[in-house]
Length: 223
Image (cartoon, rainbow, N blue to C red; front, side, top):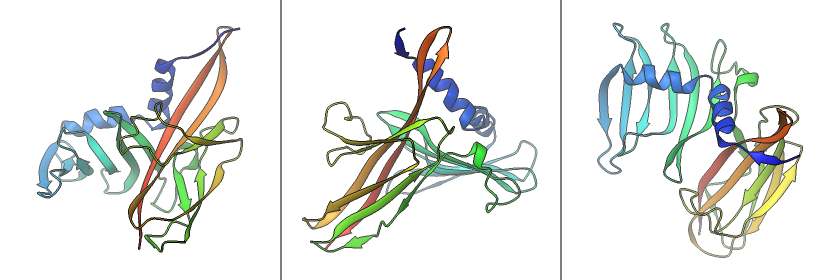
């Protein structure tokens, strides 16, 4: 039996998991209303409205290529926040990194339709000689999925060099991992990691790997 990885299936899965986000994107683009520009970074904050309505449909940042970046908020016609999605540019392409879907309020998360990670223990400032001690928790798509946590000091800012550098990894059926690292140099640092979740499914007598990834990039300062 041949094990293969089909990118098309991965793309279909992501579309389903992120709650029809690509349909949302198309609807959103039709109703552009105003743009605020940040002159320091050249990114733009955009607000879109429902057609023929003063109600905000969605809002968030885009980069110089007009690609969504950071967290975007989506609202219903009553003004209620219904979804939040985080976008990153990974190896030159926009990637839906995390997603939160809400029921009645931002404090009422629909866990079955949300995918995200959480970092515990990260501080903004450390001293030389301290240790970076983190716990990373990742919500699974389905219970039978396997999770791999990848770490590497040489990961670049768009994660385009993952296949070219040495990475440490931790494979688990659980949803969390611990990371410890001594801090020996001063200055701004980045903690970068990749969370990969996958499962093998039988498709027409062929085992197919279905996979998605979340990318972590957090700054901290060592004094």
